[in-house]
Amino acid sequence: MAEYTIQNDKLKVKFSSHGAELRSVVDVKTGYEYMWQADPAFWGRTSPVLFPVVGNYKDKKSIFRGREYKLSQHGFARDSEFEMVSEKENEICFRLSDSEVTLEKYPFGFDLYISYILEDRKLYVNWKVKNTNDENMYFSIGAHPAFNADLDSDELLLDTGDIITSEILTKNGTVSGKTKILPVDKGRLKMSDELFSEDALIIYSKDMKFISILENGDREKIRVEFDTPVVGIWSPVGKHAPFVCIEPWYGRADRDDFDCKLENREYAEVLAPGVTFDKGYSITFF
Image: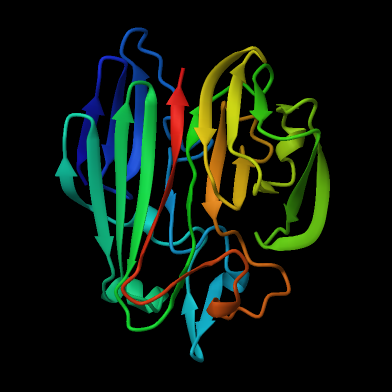
């Protein structure tokens, strides 16, 4: 495992080769740390990349061409060692490719590139997934960045109207089929332990382009911009943790009644042979 840094005159950003994980964003002038620092008393990660599954497979397994593959929540990328393939003062790129270990858990070959580009006070995160197989590849990919926040005083600002619906997860981490209406007022959503009492909020975000954290419900502190079909919002259940995650997803957990067949997963990406999926999101730190 190695650590890397990119920076400009506004922000200093640190990464780990373990999971190609964003680990720190510090304001150069004030010294303020925007990212959660992985205290295991609450949650021992900062910004894991979710691949090749977002959330959970039903029963932690998938089936492809009659064979069963076991894979834990959010996949193996977050716990894999990436190779750093390029580095400049304000950008860096990591790569993970399939191996005997991954092929035991997931039936496809791939090259996964994760790059970070810092421009002024904005960090661009790019994912490239290349299908190295001679058949269609099925996968999901997503972000899980955790930002320092006060659940008692900070609020979320959602790029949406006044009615937002969230899926409700089962205790097994699958989608239950039940939903709840979130108490959004002119795009504002107050945070609390109660808001996250049923685990992550799962919002279908077709027309939503950003979610911001408002410090003390006033000043915009962080803005996450995305163009994903699903976005998650999470803070650990019952812990009153000092952070919140805003998570753009290309994919989500299986439904509780899913048949486990990989090619039938809802919101999964389908990639033709030799084609590269090229998407991402950005974070602005004010």
